[in-house]
Length: 186
Image (cartoon, rainbow, N blue to C red; front, side, top):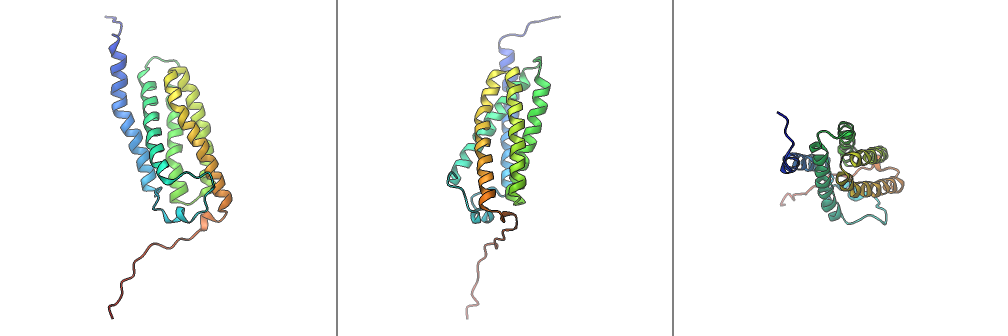
């Protein structure tokens, strides 16, 4: 029995994908950042010389969850487009760029490898551009949802590069752990 899908079926498919993919994307992004110590409390990061264009710390806490939400929605749109011609390739390239994205924070904040992190973010940018182009062939709205991500990681690449230039010894920068001294009372 051949049936044409009702108008609500594609919307329901998108909704089902979005209910799974958006929280998963946001959680994995949060996990990568949190486990690598990419917070304002990171003493190594506090000790680095920052470029003049460095935004305040709270901006990162607003931007990244928003970008992960938008990426999750874009991915959901492509997942819901079952018969689209470039869907599988778009999904593969998205997953590659997302894995690369999740490696940046551990490399930069966790391993303190600022130079390696720069090359990772350049690879991430290239893969994100390819993803956006492929998403446009599947769902134009999905591609538009990726544009703020492209802008942000371009800016982040500039920040990463400038931090690397300002801190040539960043990889070997030693920051003693915070400690409290308890007097002997005596």
